[in-house]
View 1 (cartoon, rainbow, N blue to C red):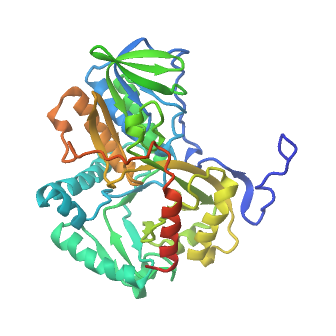
View 2: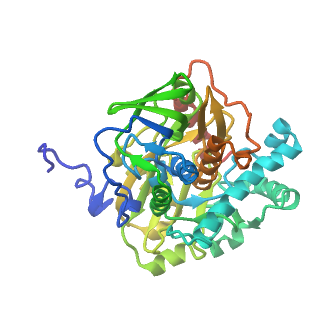
Length: 444
């Protein structure tokens, strides 16, 4: 029974939930995400106000603070409770649109440059983990992307020629007869390996970025949500419930948590809820047998799933978009557990120890967007692949605030599209996801 005298939905499913089950992120266990209390009221003024204390905002703040700009970072919640502390910890080259779409829209030269941004973002994060030795459990294990149907594998055969032969992106086809060397399941019809992709502990990475920003002089204020941004002469007035800050520059870095404080940005990002579960501790030998290469895994379903071994090799972490907006664990965890057991029948009656949910931000053209609107800087819309892009573009937007030419990107000036009748509530997702699920069931 809980405090209200009603039965817990988790206690009612001992077949699914392990004793001590927690509806909170596995990633937060044992990671110090505490931020010193900055006092009851924000400062009256700052050179730079960054809204959002995730990968983007902290990366930007580290740049501006290191340059001597008085920098304040505002977050509506606490460190780690946005997607930067909740994601699956998979790192890729991140740019969603394929080569043909990019080339058709931008021409070959700019299209190549946009794709290179994803490569550079991954390599920079690899460099931070290597040369600087930041504590984030970095594992350059690569990715296996499973083909959901024979038709999807045939598309992979065509795609690999473009990616490897035309674009120089390392990748390797794995036919179904050989896929057990990558993953112990017959669920897929072969797949594609991207050897440069990686795994990371998202909360440890976030903590390291916070430490860098704080060391540079940035101050993070938790539970201090921005409520509006308004011009005030040559400056901006950033209003919060605790007080108003006069700022020379403002950076919006809220991604899937962009609220009504900035209607222009809110109309341009589509928040989509993604949920993740962690299994109870398993025999490490079982985990190694299921994922012998320790690669991160995704597949070609339109309603995507993603999964991996935990950094210590004792659990499987499994994520996906099982419901559109649901954040109550008992509403989505059974579906994710069912999908996981469908891929790995070897897990049998394995139970869950953790479940959590967060929001990612998609854009209408499936590209990240970085730039300036009415003097306010922004970077957002990573379309579910933001671990490396957010750190990369966060640094870039910080450089743009400083007026540095190093902040330039091939996405500068790309229109940030909105849609009529859209104000930030993605009502159109319900029929869209239903159609995608039907196509997935039909393996089309």
